[in-house]
Image (cartoon, rainbow, N blue to C red; front, side, top):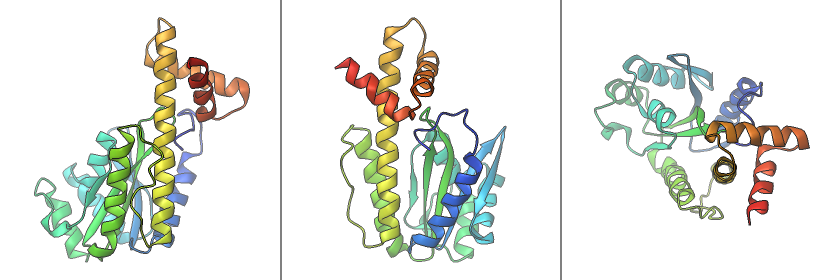
Length: 223
C-alpha cells in the first residue's frame, strides 16, 4: 500500500487480507485487527477475533491506547508488557490483561502520501514470543529515520514475523523514496508538498508505473 496513490480504491479488501494473514501466519500473534479513523470516529475494519475487537473498542471508548497512538503519530507502538502499560490507557490496561493478553504491537500502514491510513494491531498471550517482533519493528522504524533502508533488522525465528518485518522494511523504504521525490519536485515548482505529490501521481499514471517507480525516476534525474 505504501506505493499506492491515496485516491485509488480497494484499500478495505487489502486491509481485511492483512489482518487475516497476520493472525494466521505470525506464530506469536494470537489475534490481529486493523483499525482506522473514519471522519472523527475510530473503527475496526478487519479483525481475526472478537477478542481483538474488544481490545480495540476499549481504546476507542477512551480515545487512547497503542493503536490510536500509532495511527495519530505514524510511528509503531509496542507494548512488551501490557500489565505494566501506562495508565494513560486505562481501558486498554484493564481489558487486555483480563482477556489473557500479555503483549501487543501496533504497526502503521501507509498510503502513497506517506501518512498512516490504518494500523495493524497484533495481540499475543506470550510476551516472550512477541518480544522479538516488537523489537524488530521498533528497530526498523528507527533505522528508516536515518535513511539506512537496507538494514534487515534483528533475526527472528518465526517465519510469519520475518515476513512482516521484511514487508515493513520495504514499506518504509518506499515511503522514504516517495518523500524524497516529492521534496525534489516541490523545490522545482512554486507549489508546495501537496502540489508536488499530485505531480508525482500524474507522472506515475502517465507512465503506467507505481509511485515508487516514478519516485525513483525523479531521484535519478536529480543526481
